[in-house]
Length: 181
Image (tube, rainbow, N blue to C red; front, side, top):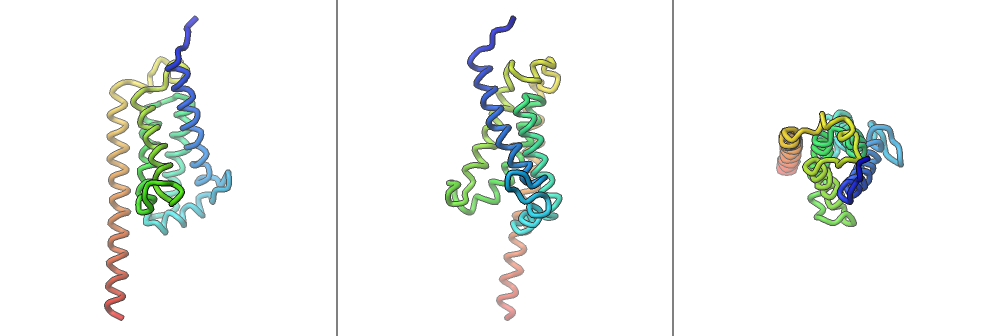
């Protein structure tokens, strides 16, 4: 019989908490659960903050949060799950960054905390109280951590960069319209 240590219990609690919050936020986007707006409302919001097309952006964010969160909670494919969740939170941070750090002012505090916790879990691994451990860590190999985090960072860089470009062009277009009037 294997004796689980404090580290295993701590990772389980961190996975359940972080993964549960992420999954709940994702289901708000995908299904409108927990007071969310579903794909239609979230898609409209995404368009309004520069993520185009909005419905696709809402779907991808919802899948990253729901899927990444559920997999983190289960401790399954932990490197990929943590990377997907962190990538989604990078996009959220970009939206909230103009409001500063603190969530009470609409800042990126909450998204950054979830993203960093997800990265931490991807790096540390799920512990022995996980499906990854039960399955012999076939989805939790050492090489998967940098590969998953690099892929998520590249994807988030492209998506956030395209959003920033759209917002710049939109601002420039509005300024040109003002000068023409």
